[in-house]
Amino acid sequence: MAQQSDDKVTVLFMLAVMAFAIVLVDDRWVRVGLGLLPALMLAQRALQGSGVGAKSAPRVGAADRRHDAEVRRYIDQLLKHFREFYTMCHLMAQGTLDPAEAKDLAAGLERRLNALLAEVTDAARKQAEEARG
Image (cartoon, rainbow, N blue to C red):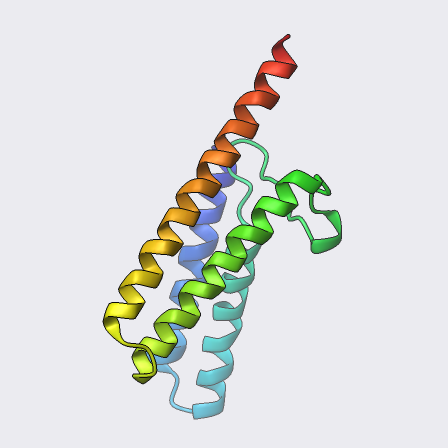
């Protein structure tokens, strides 16, 4: 609880410095410097997380991600579907793709996503059953 209170005090202090810099300082470069420093510190604090409550999950880099082949395959398929959807939207916005065709493509994409969801759910259920028994 003390960490959360310290965080609030720090954020309020930084906001006060920014307000002081913006409202009361006449020199443009001093105002920019005094406003930019707390803004950057607030952004850094937000990106790092405050760590309040339960232990914060560590940030996971690309090299540290799960190497579970099955999960990776599902993620790759999902990303492929997202790319198809965005391409379809882009083509429709450009007028290259007819709205009726886009609607058909979206329906097919929805069916494939539902099938992928069912496959993921079945695999998770099967894995949970194996872990129990």
